[in-house]
Length: 304
Length: 255
Image (cartoon, rainbow over all chains, first blue to last red):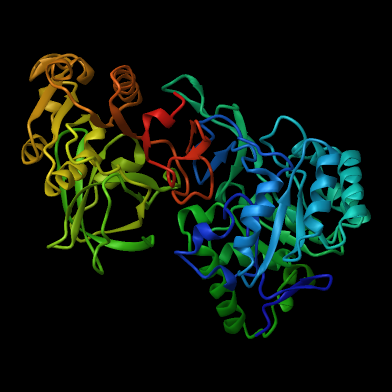
C-alpha cells in the first residue's frame, strides 16, 4: 500500500498532517500517539518577535464548532530556534513551520531564518489568520498583497513553500492561481471562517476581539467546496482542511482533489484522531481495492 | 504522569440538589496517582451544541475501590446532559490534567476557602492534607442552606465554617465576610470558587501577607496546552490554565 504523496521532491509517508495551532509543537500529544506516524505536523504559527496574543476570552463554543481569537501567541523565532527546534529533531516526520507577519519584511526575514534549519523542509505561509490587527488575513484577502508576499518569500526561501489560503474572499481560486504563479509549491486551505458570537447572559461579545475564526465540522461543506474548486484550477498539490472529524470526512477531501489533509480542531476532542484517520484511510483503500493513495485523489473529478 | 484518554464506567450518579451532582467512575486499569487540583476533560456525547469537552475537577478518590468522583454543577447543555447519565454508562475522559496545589510547609496554618462549584477540588485537597498530617480549617460559602453541599464530607477533614448569603445557615454574607478571617490566623490559604470570590480572597491574602493559591476555571478547548485558548494574564505573560494551572499562586496573577 502506498499512502505517500509529495510536494515536488519532498516526500510525505502519508497524507495525514496536523493543522497549525491545533497541535502545538507535537510534544503536547506525545502521551496520546506516536507523532512520527503522521505524514507531517504543521507547528504553531510563528512570528519574528514574541507575541502575547489576544486577551481572554479567546474561544467560544458554537454548534458543531468553535470560534477562536488566539492571535498568534508564540515566543518568536529566537526562542523557536533555541528551545523548540532541538526538541522536534527526533520526530521522524516532516515538520512544517507556519510563518506569520505584520509586514512583508517580517515574512521574508522569518523565511530566511527558517531556510537555514535543516530539519524544516517546508514552511506554510500564513496569509489567512483572521485574529491579528495587522497582516495575517489582510495579505490573504487582497490579490496584489497575496502575490507580493508570496513572490518576496519565494525569492529567499529555497525549500517547499505552502501558502495557506483564507476562505474569507469572493473567489478563492483567484488566490490559489496567483500564489501558484508566484512559485508556491502547494496551497493549504481553508483557514478559519470569520465569525462571531454574543454572550446573551452577559450582553457582550463572547470573544474579547468580538470576531474570531470559526473551525470544526460547521465549516466542512464550505471547505470541501473550496478545496474542490482549487484542486480543479491549479497544478500544485492541494492540502485540504476544515472540519475533518473522522475518516469519512478526510476521504471526502481526498476524493474531491486534495492530495493530503490536515486535522485541526478534531484533535481537541480526540487527541488520537489523526492516527485513527490515517488507519481509516488505509482500510478504505484496502476495502475498495486500491493500492495507491493517488488513485483516489480527485477521483470524483475523473468519473462522470 | 502520562495523560490518558479512556472510556470509564459510571458506577454512581448522585444528585445533591437542583444544581449539583456527583458522578462516580470506575477505573479500567489502576487509576493514576492524582494530585489535588487536577482535572479531567470530559466528553459530552449526543449534541452538536456540546462540541468541546468540559473541564471538571477531580473531587474525591478511593484508591481501594479504584474509583474517583467528579462534582459537577449544571450550568449549561453539556453539564445537563452529563447529569442524565446513569450507572453503567460510559464517560470518555482525558485525564489527569493540570498542575496541583503545592504542598504546605510543616507548621502552616491552613484554610480552605470554597464557594459554589469551587468546593469540588478542595475536598480532594483537604483529604490529601489530612492524610499527610495537616489540620486545615475550611470555610464554605453558599447562596442559602438548601444549596449547601458536601458538608458532612468536609467535616471529616477539619473544622468547617459556613456562610450563606441569606443567613439561613452559618454566618450571613459572602464567604470572605466570615469572622474566621479575623478570629483565626492563617499563613496559607487555598481557594476555589467564583472569580469575584477568589479575587476578594486574593486581595485579603496580599494585604495580610498570606500565601495563597487559587484554582481557575477558564474556558478551554484542548486541555493539553495546544490551543492556547484558556490563557490567564500573569507576571510571566499569558499562561495556559490547562497545563500551567489550573492552580496559580496569586502573586503570579495579574488580576
